[in-house]
Length: 121
Image 1 (cartoon, one colour):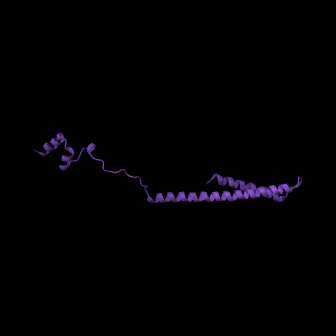
Image 2 (cartoon, rainbow, N blue to C red):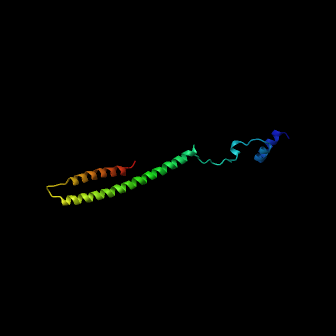
Image 3 (tube, rainbow, N blue to C red):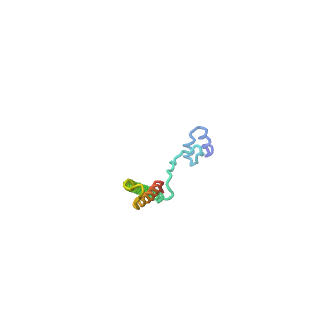
């Protein structure tokens, strides 16, 4: 039996895969087994992962620092507002001390600063 006859006989018989492989012939595309594992996406540059992680950590640190500054400024704002209230209570209807005006200006500046910090970067 010739080579072609054996190949065609194998196709008719049903042992196609084994006979074709033993004869060194390639399988038709639909019969080939999938042996390739799905690829896991890798960053193009390993430094990108490190850089992204570093940026995230830096953003977290800056956010924490900003929150600490806001707490400190609001505590100072409360203290100044309390002092302003006490100074106004001591003043009379006809007199306002220079200290009261300075405290009001300082409160205004500090309140604007806190507002800007709360908006974030």
